[in-house]
Image (cartoon, rainbow over all chains, first blue to last red; front, side, top):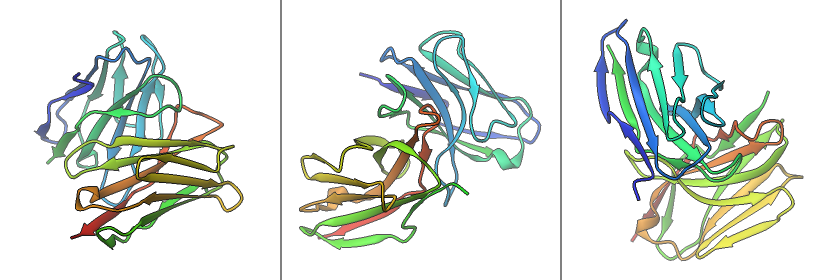
Amino acid sequence: NAGVTQTPKFRVLKTGQSMTLLCAQDMNHEYMYWYRQDPGMGLRLIHYSVGEGTTAKGEVPDGYNVSRLKKQNFLLGLESAAPSQTSVYFCASSFQQGSGYTFGSGTRLTVV
Amino acid sequence: SQKIEQNSEALNIQEGKTATLTCNYTNYSPAYLQWYRQDPGRGPVFLLLIRENEKEKRKERLKVTFDTTLKQSLFHITASQPADSATYLCALVPYSSASKIIFGSGTRLSIRP
């Protein structure tokens, strides 16, 4: 009963470096999401996917790319990290639109 | 502008009392509202969902109300316990795009023994 697994849990990047955050779910959910959470702000949607092979932009997509090549995996990429991307990143999945989300435990990313 | 607001100040409640958290929204047409619990260093955990045409929903010691006239949802924890201490997030599911749930910034609840 793993649910949603995110790797890595922590990462420090230098400005301009790239990295990929991996999200894996074992619940056969169609919908997957990437959020960022910053102090004093709500979770903000970066990108989401309504099924394998599909992706769409959320509220704050700039500087990020995503891919959903397999139903169970949703990857978030940072091509050229900036200090403004320092945040905690959460992946989530859901069975259908609007149903309760299952979240991963988060990735704490610091860009120096 | 569209906003979803929760009390940013922490709520401190004596054990055994009822805790009531508020979620207000403006300029949204929500299909439904969700409530989540988040512990420090962890991801949010889904608790309850209430639909637009439902006035009240209960689950064990939890109760959620939804007033579309006031544009407000209330989240109640009865017989509160120290283990209920956490940050509680409300999330709005708009009719316009059910895949783009909007989260409030959360209210921190502390239950003192």
